[in-house]
Amino acid sequence: MSSDPLAPLLELPGVADAADRARDALSAVHRHPANLRGWDKTATEASWRAGRSSAAIDGGSVELRRDGDFDDPVLAGSMRVAQALDGDALEQLTSVFRRAPAQAFARLHMLAAADLVDDPDQLGRPSASPGVAGRLDLLGQLITGATSAPAPVLAAVVHGELLGVAAFPTANGVVARAASRLVCTSTGLDPHNLGVPEVTWLRRHDEYRKLSAAFADGSPDGVGGWIVLCCEALEAGAAEARSIADAARAG
Image: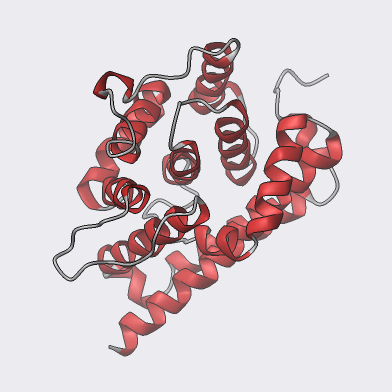
């Protein structure tokens, strides 16, 4: 019997194949000619698309002001997170995530929720609800080496757990989707953060909500369905990244 807590997930219908497709798609887009040397530009465009889509999933605006500021607090927080997942800031945050995931979660929440709370002391502080601390500790163990499950599966589990446990009083959606991205960068699945899975989660919003709730319930069908959805979003996010790269090369 495997001691890897996520190993049984690979036996769920469709999970292993979906994870392989996501991995292959992201690997291929990193080999795109525009991404061999100019990935910094395509990654920045991807982070902006991701930030706007992530905000929209949670009901935020997608309108960007000419002066670069944001009137909507959900969008403002999501775009701060997007900036932290780009360039040198991404490298720093990924380094923290690898060794101290809880610190990275707290940082993401501080960025995402800065305009959503009245008390600044709430920023970066996990919910005090029963069970939250233990679940976050288990997530930290998985992220720092307690599983050898494929990166797309781990990304889906981290994403789903942060949503399901409602780790923070606010902005859990933006934090969970950003944490999924950090799994992708820290494991080498998407080291430059080129993919944009948020576009698919937004397009399939009803399914996203339904399956995230099913994951939280813990049934095999619910867990498997959520992981497959997340892997499909990563695969489609690679296609979005390819469109960005094609436009960059054409330009």
